[in-house]
Image (spheres, rainbow, N blue to C red):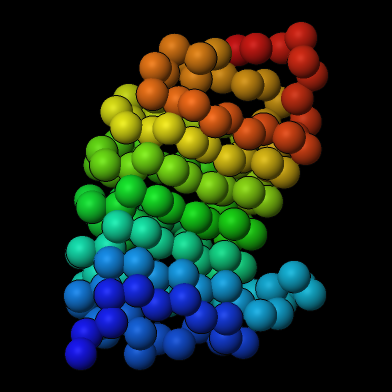
Length: 162
């Protein structure tokens, strides 16, 4: 029997899970990440998971290359959570995720959004709580599909909308 969903809370990344090409949902939250421990995802493991609709890698550090070349090529993703993932920017390639509805990038180091971000056609919910934004990007308010926008605990001065 092929498991379609896997949720786990290990102490380290269980790389054998990435061999299951039939996965539609994968959620890994490292048990020790909130204590300051972290694991860095090795390259080449997400490429096989082409059927994923939901991906949550809370507490796992993601390199720019893995984000751009692997995550942004998971074109069936509808829900993406990369909390506490040491991300400092979102790549332009995010536009490839046209089915994306929800994204949570809580507790990273993101300061701004690429222009391609505002072209995501199905995005309904974004969470950028506890990042490094100094302004809420004005184009967000022009995205007709967005219903829930979270920017708490950033560096935002409410008078500054860019």
